[in-house]
Length: 248
Image 1 (cartoon, rainbow, N blue to C red):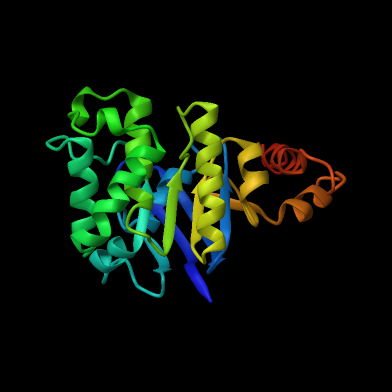
Image 2: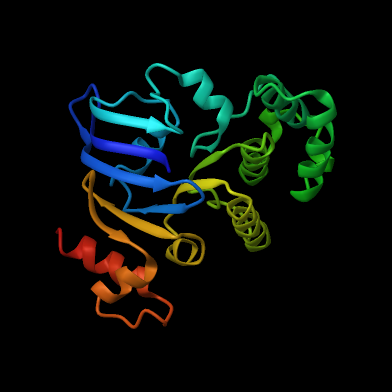
């Protein structure tokens, strides 16, 4: 079954800048799909369209079988999102942000209360639980956003460079949680500029360049196309450099 369906999608900003053009991809349920690209390749525009924050200029998108133009609220209740920009409510403290998000998703207090405590502890946020979001460091905000994405038990995680600004220990913890989420049947769509992250986490990888998908496949398939031994690390990096270099 398909969790993310993108068919011939384009997005043009009001300024006339064409961010995405002719993009088609399918992400299966239970799959971790990684989107790689240089800055300005269109990754964040794709993420925002999948998260219902932008409406495509052309083409069709289905998220968990739903049209984002017709069912944005239902989609938001069933997904977890970590955008690049802060998506925390600045009028609430960290704990209140997590509680509010759980209540929006329709979770009962008996369900969300222990989850809030669990995620605060897991990410070392107990001491920041009553802190105003406005007083948090960038890294601490990122941790709270990760907790917010996972805490409702979504069917699909949409992560835009989720480990940017995190220390190595928290990055490793997130990798473990993504793996556990997938093993429990969850689907993950992530953009990243860490090629090691894509190679370690993703079942398949797409390479975006100039708003177009220029390569796609498993790490082994991409490594083979790039002339690398698929059993050796660095295959995704080699494929990325080859695909992007060939378009310049």
